[in-house]
Image (cartoon, rainbow over all chains, first blue to last red; front, side, top):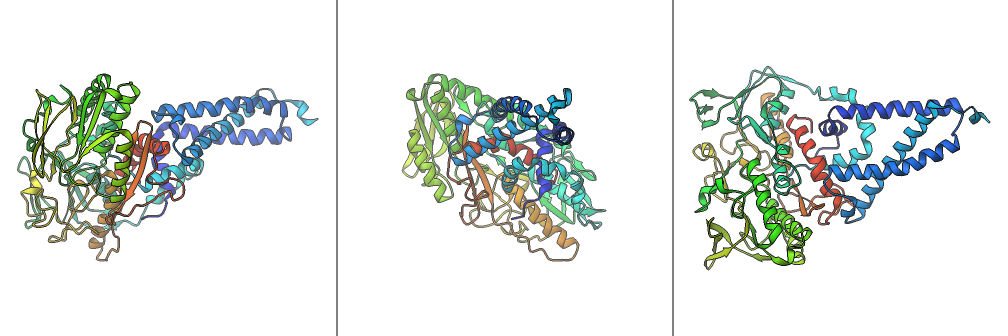
Length: 118
Length: 439
């Protein structure tokens, strides 16, 4: 059989998400750049904001699982083996990290804290 | 039915590699493979999964060639989704799109059925009498559902009085769901089974039995129901290790199995199905039945010189091809792909996924005067749904070997949510990518 071709990923995700694929990519890239820029600007993480973002991140992971359940007409309660627990952890983890980073970045750019320099 | 294959493997990896994949957008030009200049005239009889995939791959690889697809139907059906429609999971629209959506640039579409194939004269004649000559022919007509072979069957009554039949059409799949749902509300005898002979996606009748069982359980009516599976042979599935697993699952779910029972006739008013058995006929009353008709090659192929003339594929007219290359054994400029190919096992979209690149490579090698070493090993796959929310990812080849796309991660005979997720989320996009020659 053929070896894995990364272009196939792109084709499949384009079919799956259509226009939204590029919106997600854009949000991901802009979010990542803005996050790094914020870190540079503030010379580190603001712990209070990070904790707030992480709390929302916990919710984001849950939302990711709910979305996954909706689109797959099923739910994580259908898990039947280790691969399923891995998938649940993956989906939750992606939702958690993405939400945390995006919320942290949004909060940071809306009201940058000078105290961060302290 | 349901596609995929290594594309499943790709999907899984892709889930963790989305940013990487997306970042490679510029690599879209990677498809700029070496194109070959040719004046060859290639006719593809059939614009379904195999025909469109072949057209896309040929169009991407050849310059100057005349590529014609002959198909009388305008709608394209995503057949792997029919079971989901008949299970109440997806709407009918989920499986219907337009053939024109997938026709690559430069490929001509003759929107007529093929009426005659003449491999001696190297031409296909359409329903209106148009003669279409070719240098190379790809036969991808799909198959014919032979409902007429079941005495008393009337496809117009699918959805009524407990009669279901998923394969007939998207409308019939939706009507079958109505019939199943009504049955799940009250219980009774549910009868399932499959025809003898080759059929598309042999896992589908099994899936539907499991799905029916689960709907009954979810509505609290399993205790009021008896489920009977009529196997056409002594086995439940062509791959022994899978057959044994299904036997165990049927035992677990309380599904009664009758072997060597082939549906012969049906009384739609009295709801009685009659089966041919080794010891005569047997009647079975039902409150719900999923009729899977016998399948054979379409008339245009059966009436041509292309089918096998002896062996297990002769009676139903499947095209006589070499199973490794899909090339016709007597007409080397003819290939057969998808359901119509006279090869063991593969009548699924996953088979198409792996057959087409092999045949196209051989065809292009012929044009460029080279030899191709590509081999199709019979790979096919089936996410065998065992309850709503779980499936077993089953992949195998000509030799009944189990193939594991995710060794150590997804066990092939394990009921998993992840396999269901692939079936409901990833297979259709992978299938559509395949039609466009991108997967």
